[in-house]
Each structure stands twice: as structure tokens, then as C-alpha cells.
Length: 130
Ligand SMILES: [Fe+2]
Ligand SMILES: [Fe+2]
Image 1 (cartoon, rainbow, N blue to C red):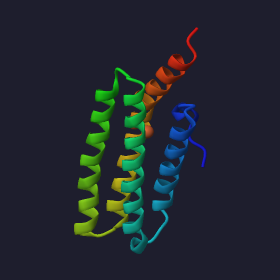
Image 2: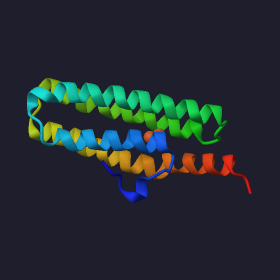
Image 3: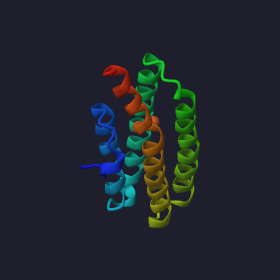
Image 4: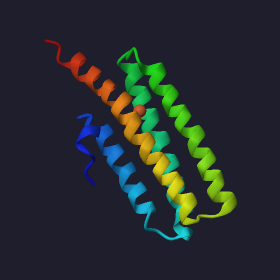
């Protein structure tokens, strides 16, 4: 799956993880309620791994913006846990699933634009100083 051009960081590993995440969100809109639980598990694992990977890179590169960036990852999990709980309690209705998918999509778009791209720019500038 291609990611929207404004979300490309040119950090291959990061772009690949974002593309997988967006693809799964898109898929969630079309699967039945019985598949939703495994899809949510996938999202949780995938994002946890991806955040850990970004946070490791930021630390290695001594990126000055890493605390603010990490904070957004933590806020994401808080939101995610709430939306997941709603699905577990009230069922995987199209409304509940749609709310989770839309919230995660919005979060990804905002976070990648603000934080991931900024970090990717920092990495490029650090690796190829002029
Ligand atoms: Fe991030
Ligand atoms: Fe990311």
C-alpha cells in the first residue's frame, strides 16, 4: 500500500511500518466482527514495535525532540486502550470499529506529519552535513 505523499519520511523502515499500519486500518473497515479482535491485536503489537523502533533510533541519534515525540506515542496508547475497551464491552459494531479506525487514522496523519517527518529530516541532515 502506498502512503499519501505528505506522510513520506523517506526513512524506509519507518515508511514501511506506516504503510502496513494504514493498510490494516483500511482492511478493518471491510472485515467481519469475528476478525476484529485479531486485527486489534495486530495493531497493538505493530504500533508498540514501531514506536519502540523509532524511540531507539531517536535515542541513538540523540535527537533533541525525542521526549515530545515519545509523549505522543504514549497518548496514542491511552486513546487506543479506550477505543479497544469500547469494542470489547459494546461489541465490534460498525460504529465502534469505525470510531477506532478513524481515530487511529487521524492520529497517524497528524503524528507522522508533525513528529516522524521532523525526526526523518533531522536524520537526513545529521547523516549528510553540508
Ligand atoms: Fe513516531
Ligand atoms: Fe511512526
